Length: 482
Image (cartoon, rainbow, N blue to C red; front, side):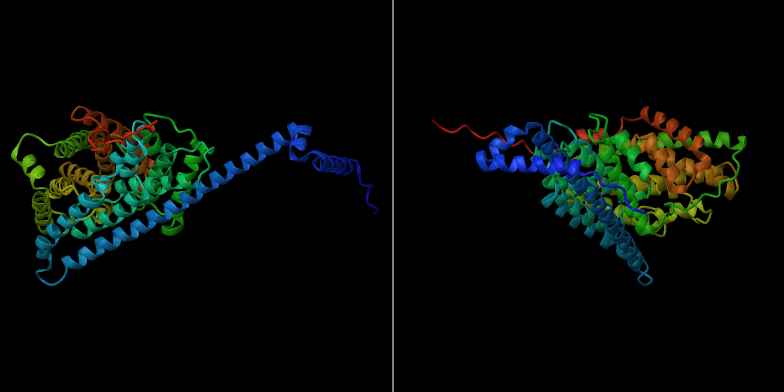
């Protein structure tokens, strides 16, 4: 069938326009061309600017992928450190007692390195990011808290703490790591991108949570609940895309599996109402007390221990680490590290723990944080909460199957009470254990435990952020002499 005749009118008009512009340029140069077609050039410049905006967005998304890869590497490094400490613990009949020397020695070395080279890496990392989001900081002060350099040091220092056998976690520090990697993208963005350090730090911090726990939704809620209280995000869609992308990187590496597996939760019945309320109140009180102890430990009191910590920080850290090592020996190594294996064993009904495990894990985590080395409390909080739920189930005489919901409630309750983020705790635990059948129960326990904790203490991360020492802002340059 013959083709229909082609309409050459548009092409003829375009050719005539191009010829006219060429003649104008030959006679008057580029300024004459600009004067002839002002709207054309305005539209062209708008398109070019829009193209640069897409490049800026692509840079941010590339850094989101890099953040996910860094968090995956951090995960492997932390797991390797935990495995190495277990090998030390199992080295011969007296291998376990080597921790009495190894744990304090390595802890002192880590504290010395942190105080000497990266003081901004001390603590969990979440207070540092919260403080760095304040608008009253200059760039130098912000870099001291959140930067690529601090992030890389944080990975090594937290992995070293796990190698030492301290009761710490990597998930909280991952927030500072993700923010430090993401904020590095600023140097590749155009001045007109409109993407500031605030948006990049929020995206990186939440992306770190999403990749660390394999919970993209938890990362988004963490950004909204914990990091965006003072100022809203100007590029929320780009921030959320970065969080999801970093989470997908972790999924691609570790598989689409939940952090603790799938809970075999049976149909909940009214007989669990009383034990469930007891778990919520107990975790609220215990979590509030834990948060208060952390804050008071950092702030200090007019007592001898605080004076010893202030005057002799390395001796104090060695004493705390020795206490952690003694507790680890007493529990057969159950309190060392983040407590992932112990928490999973509790959820599966296969844990064989001493009756005072929960209390000892509580004390070991507090002492580990008191040393001053970079340390997170997210995962240890889950382990302590799981222990409280398990203890309540034993007290109520429940079987292994009915104890599982109480253990999950204990996890979400203690995490919500400690961090002061009930929605984040509820979403993270629900995604970690695939506990969709317990949505209402987890939410109610999280809100109740958080409310009880507020009677004991203020939000821990906000108080710690307010106490962070900062370098003096750079003095403005003196005006030139006349």
